[in-house]
Amino acid sequence: MAETVRLSVAQATIRFLANQYSERDGVEQRLIPRCLGIFGHGNVCGLGQALLQAELGGADEPQMPYVLVRNEQGAVHIASGYAKQSNRLSTFATLTSIGPGATNMITGAATATANRLPVLLLPADIFSTRFPDPVLQQLEDPRSLDVSVNDAFKPVSRFWDRINRPEQLIPSLLAAMRVLTDPAETGAVVVCMPQDVQAEAYDWPEEFFAKRVWHVGRPAPDQAALERAVQAIKAAQKPLLVAGGGVVYSQAAQALRDFAAQTGIPVADTQAGKGAINFDHPQAVGGIGSTGAASANALAAEADLVIGVGTRYSDFTTASKTVFANPEVKFVNLNVHAFDAAKQSATMLVADARAGLDALGAALGGWSTDPGYQAHASGLASEWQQVVDRCYHLGHGPLPAQTEVFGALNELMRDQDVIINAAGSMPGDLQCLWRASNPEQYHVEYAYSCMGYEIPAAMGVKLAVGPDREVVAIVGDGTYQMLPMELATIVQEGIKVIFVLLQNHGFASIGALSESHGSQRFGTQYRRRTASGRLDGEPVPFDLATNAASWGADVLRCDGIAEFRENYAKAVASPYTTVLYIETDLLGPNPPGTAWWDVPVAQVSELDSTRAAYGEYAVAKRQQRHYL
Image (cartoon, rainbow, N blue to C red):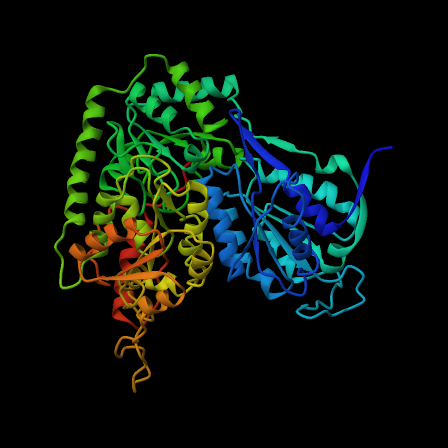
């Protein structure tokens, strides 16, 4: 008879999670080293009690520290930041009470799934017995008594289950761990925990709690598929490689650099792939797409073959399917997920990025692109670096442009430090300007472009990289107002992060988009409502610097770039979380745009500005096509 141990479902959950590990290339790490969350009536006596018991338990048991956050969405962003910086080999569990606590996590779940990042969510749920029905915070559905708000997680998660009986926990958690550690399938994993079931006792087999290692392999390419890819590459005259996030997660940066040097193929990068090839590599040509560099986009326009490695081809990467303009362009896609490898009617190479690049390099032998083409690509890249220098040192006044802040940071931060951003105009400026020397330095969430990601994610990143590397999160005034409260969690945990808070009294990105598409920056500035009924009065007199200080952070106000540089040095020297507050010009100037983005304009309008914008949109739309 197998040995058993009597525990509640919640206690069994925590003990199981504490014994899960991932492994790749012989390196093991805890898969779930922390739990984050907020307790409510749905979990305080279930998972809350289990975490307390684990904390007070014996030294022989793996520890499961609990972090009290301020917002459940922020908790998921913390886990996402940690998972992304850990190359998806480790993540956090996030738990909530039922109702609003659970639904607060949905945006975080969508962010994680869109970015293919593993996060484990444990929302409490309604009573399985249905005696208290409706329970406090239950949203009733007259069509079915089995529906709760947690069903809303289904479209934004990669695995979803509800534990209505204790014995269901065993197959559910095992399946959850499989998805978390599958590079092709990973994303938000949701295991819903009815509050009565959390407290229910069961005799669990001891082996359920034994140390379990989930091995993350490196799938090799099929030989026939490899031969087809090699044939396509050798037939190309002007190939271009697009490096996506899969290169980073696979830790394939060196393989990519070696492949580029061997073949002479120029390499452009996406937001998620930036740094996979160092900016000063002879084959590096910068960011690609709607917010890309002129160098990469010019090469994309003439490329007869695009080799996508670890990219999902977002609309920003393809400039809404206009940037690859050669009528004869073909695609070879190397991706661990067949769903992505098949995009753009490509020759598919389903494999781990590092294993695939190594195999391609070996199969190509001494083949390389024409020296004239390599010189052409190098010349375009060199010209773009001159544009970067100008954007970094504009001398714009009276308020600096945000590109000058980025320039100062790019020059002040060390190679091992990490820059974080997510939404607004800043990711676009960063993609085309930031000089990344390695894949761990650049942490921009742009698959979901979730406002509010930066502050909580910075905490997760710092926990991943440790005390010897600075973590710098750039936050606009718009995104700051979404989730500032995790500053208090960061201070509570004694974690040191540097935040750069840019105040420009509005939405720079959407304001510029609105103006360029005929909508006159309507509703994009923080201004008082006037007697006319419009929001076009004086700026709203909020003080975000004082607000940041109220959460417990040190705040240094910066009057211009020179003082910003001085205060950055003070922030680095400080052991405490510091916010560098600086006002910037809402109107830029921003880097020159070199590609399109499909944002539909009203086909009919009484506004001259909108009618003119639609005419421009209709012309640009003609360049769009499916790649068949």
